[in-house]
Image 1 (cartoon, rainbow, N blue to C red):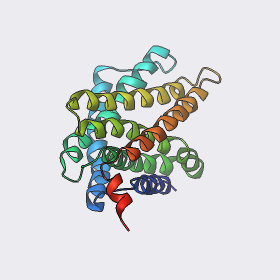
Image 2: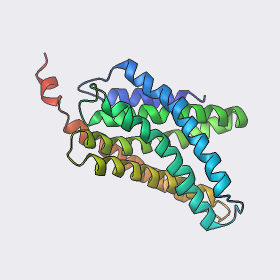
Image 3: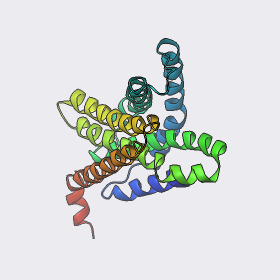
Length: 225
C-alpha cells in the first residue's frame, strides 16, 4: 500500500515521456539516490534546524510558517534538487527538456517511497489510503514543477536562473501544502492544502504538455513507420 501509489506515478511519467524514453538504469539510480541520499541530506538538515531554530509552539502561525517553508519545504526540495542538478542533469541521456521532469520525479518518488513506508508502518491502512491521494501526488507535483524548469535550464544560457526557479517553485508549493496542514488548529484551514495541491497539479499537467509539444524528438518520432 505504501509503494503502490509511488509505482503508479513512476509508470505515469514513463508513459508521458512519449518521444525518447530514458534509460531505465539511470531512472532507477535517480530513484535510489532519492530514497537514500535525499533522505540522508534531509535528516542532517533537520537535525541542524532543530538545534539552531527550535520551534516549540505548535499553535504559533509564524513558527509553523517557518517550519513549512524554510525547514520542511526548503530542506526536502533542496535534497532532491542537488541530485537532479549534479547527477542527472550532467548525463548525456538528459537530452531534451522533458527529461528534467522524468529525473526530478524519479528522485522525488524515491524520497516519497521511504517517507511513505514509515508513515504507513505507523498509521496502517487508513494512512496509506489518505497519503495515496495526497502526499504522494504532492511530491510528484513538486518534482514535475522543479523538473520542468530544470529541463529548460539544461538547454538555456540562463541555466542558473531556470534551475533556481524550479527549486523555488517546488519549495513554494511544498511549503504552502504543509503550512495549511500545520495550522489545522484553525477550523477549516486544512482545505487550503488541497487547494494548493490542485493548483499545483493543474500547473504540472501544463508543464508536461508543454515539454511534450516542444520535444527535440517529436518530429523524428512522427516520421517513424
